[in-house]
Length: 342
Ligand code: NAI
Ligand code: MG
Image 1 (tube, protein in one colour):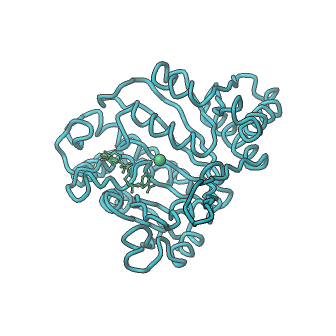
Image 2 (image 1 turned 45 degrees about the vertical axis):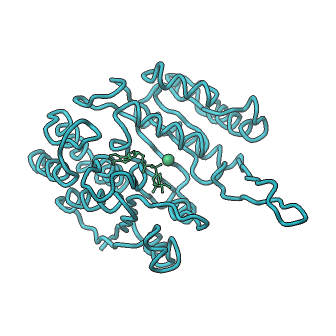
């Protein structure tokens, strides 16, 4: 039987994973789920934030579902390690407003495509020390290769076509970071030139990251697909989540040539941990993205519809959306709605 690795992690990661599994296990799918460890609790028990066995399970699975983890000071990040190990170079973060949700904006619907393997998240950092051993400087290397930039821009372009979008925006800071972001921006226009004759309907433009941060809160409906480097994409996707009702609604997919890793955008949320307050919708929508990747489009679409219906009714929603329901109540009402739709 084909396999899906599940890594619940820490804090609300465990809570939203349990909730998501209620929805996932209600479907008639032929997958075995392999529960695996990663994160802070895992570090305390096994001395590593991500055991080799977890990586092995993820490598041999058709897809991996990830909750969230607490950071472990001084130790490598399990999620960044997984993204590298699985060579999932594209991080997709859809930002879509939902009817019935009290949010800053309505009719927002864009996709952030974030480069996932390099940039400032290459994790190549060092200290310079004075003669008496005191740290005087810290340095982070920001690596941007032409190969990875071309690959992510081409991927984003193809996603735009596939999703019938008409506009693609490259976000960078090439006026200051002339060499690194210069390569990124040039790669983007190389891809645009390569495909523009085939797809005259696609409008391409580019903005600086700082201006984009402003445009997202002044005219978010203008965006359709954003392609950008690792750190910028991370920041803009949290801003995007804020436009449509918060991190509890934001799913993500990490896609490679062979593998897929799916996770809500949010972290382990220690401020609400253990209280049943976590919104499971981001996790449920990440499951939908995973099913789409696994070519189970029928179930993926039904899950999206079930979530839309539950949010529209507004009866079973968690406190982040103004409701009083618990994590599990929301998961059960999505599952019940799904059963009606299938
Ligand atoms: P966070 O995403 O955990 O929380 C930010 C805010 O959003 C908090 O107020 C939290 O209560 C709220 N929130 C997040 N998810 C929610 C949900 N599903 N329902 C309702 N409210 C929700 O980010 P924060 O506080 O910066 O980081 C907390 C920990 O998570 C840190 O240790 C951080 O390193 C880790 N982290 C892990 C990530 C991952 O596992 N991929 C991603 C981001 C942070
Ligand atoms: Mg983030």
